[in-house]
Length: 157
Image (cartoon, rainbow, N blue to C red):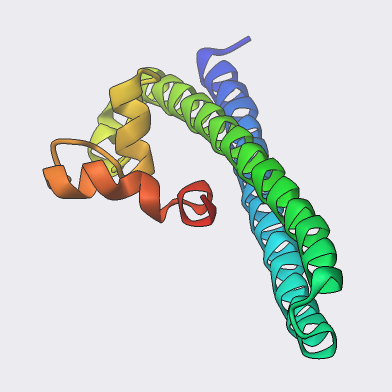
């Protein structure tokens, strides 16, 4: 098989895998946002229900009994949601590492294209952080410390 054809086939295979990882990342984000929406809907519904019960029961024993149960359900759903979001963030990290490996393979085939990539071709922690836009050398120390608070699990936590 001629080398040009072999390179062409390799690029096709790599590009297909790259698009597959991109689609998987999109599904990961979609699931994350869906879970956050579900939790916020349950939380909002519980607050509204508790307000209505408080009006009817005047914060008596009935209200306390129902409130304990409802807040337990909200707490459980919140903990489960944060746990799943952490798992999805880990999965997203794996997809980024995979895309970095593919980018490395592209550059092995065509090293002259390196100047065109703004994300990393390395699958180590530093490379993944660069691709995610969290490269410590480009972020302020304060931004790096507080990054966890602006992620979906950080906000819900």
